[in-house]
Length: 430
Image (cartoon, rainbow, N blue to C red; front, side):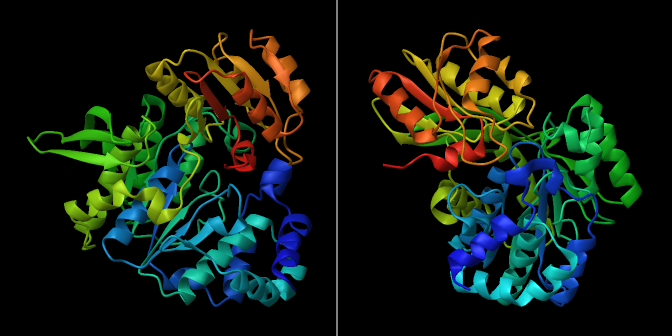
């Protein structure tokens, strides 16, 4: 098989959540266990950190990976979904998995794949574990897909578990209350393994404490340990002042991820790193600061308040649920552009009305759709948005919408592209 034939096999033959949604999600770990057993259980041969959450888990995963790399550790990073290239999902020290390995892996597992018919995600998780083992990584940062309890990644015994936050997303799969969603995410808590909770709500804190108590797992709430007390922009960096609560200790961190919502993720990351340091990992303040300054360079992260053009400023952000959109809109308010242009595309199975209710009516909209079956038709999105007082034109292709927005915008305006990872992934970079 060629690499392209291999990718076509993965995308078209296997159930893929990004394409078909909930029908690809399996509420058990049988296939992942069977695949990994076939591969001689590579997940048991690597040390790892496991990260779940509604928002921020991708940023925290990349921040942790960058710091480990800066500290000299050979670092695996598994994240999903990808923006442009399948190989973004599996990296070692920032370098994407080799195409030859992907081809060889798929050919190797075809006999068992024909037998058990695994999903796209189940295969990619097994692929990551196998690749990290063959690369002999010192540590692997593993991001869950969605949920936690039945997520394919949840067969590892990590050094540390991290749950960034809980919000309204994937309610058709994870539950229609925040405690129910929290219970699914808490499924990554393992017996005796410490867990860091990034942001907790009154209705979710007890869920986490109960799950940790059942597992006899130490639980640490990051917000009770540190607080970001101030931030500013300086030389294309976000500079955040963080205080360790109950002490006089303060530190300034320079982030190349410049979304203001990264101040929350930073607190989670710092506590996770502290817990790992307590376990004996060589993660000192200088290395932490060096890693956080170069997350994008070290790990290849994109799509988090990513400025791709100036005059007008064009920003890509993968915000796609209510909580994520709220954070992005807070940044828009602080920037206070002359006029706001929003290129918006969403998928059918999101709580679209909850997002539309947050969006500003004064913006001009360019409704569009990604090239995946789950994408909501741009014309239908426009109709739905009109009911919320959001107006603009619809475009059948992402880059047509982006070009229209740039053509309409003045130099002092802001063009924001958001609503779906898949929309952001299709934007042609200049």
